[in-house]
Image (cartoon, rainbow, N blue to C red; front, side, top):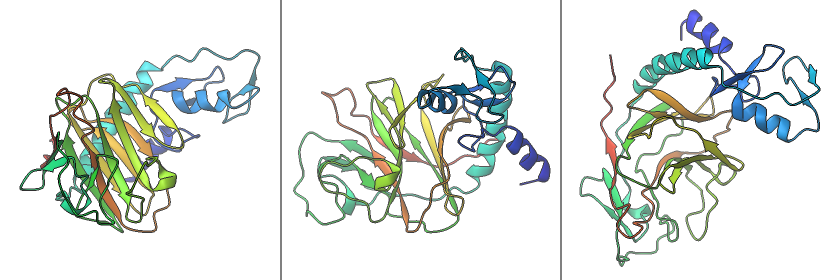
Length: 270
């Protein structure tokens, strides 16, 4: 990263989550934060004060998104995605981890939910409750990026999972349990599963999702690969073992969600 890019990153960084702004808002004292970060900060406090300069406000300010700053941030995050696409890796699905209701394509690039439970060995690696599957390729250092087509789906989940994560029974898919994921459910509701679900307000329904991981930095970021816009980032994570791409096409829901998730080749835009 050039020194100018590093300086811009610092200027566009929320001092609460330490990531580039998402839906930036400005306080009366003139400091900027992610809307969700500041709202959660004030929800958990008896007073409303600026997390940066500590100025206290008599009344909770009505937070309006700073549209000019958001446009600057979105433009920067597009440059950002191009850099991260340079770390694209070839990912294929691991049939030994696939829930018995999942149908994988012969090439290991597509997965969808089927109506019939297949007779498969109940090996330790296989998900037996969640309709999930992992990639064959694991990563324990460096950076990697992959893209998945989600067009036509009404529910899905994507991200990465720690090698030693629980695969059997009900699972809470959050970082504490070794899962860093973003979800679509109920057709148009998006969320990231951090300590608790974080609702995501997306202006455009994504058709292709990009997932980027920087192992040493402890970063997992999600992008709308078609609009080059940032969706969500898990920051400040501590990775100590292999990470595997995670996929869930979710249930078929009476034929409304049978379109497969498709791992697609990465085409870096000029």
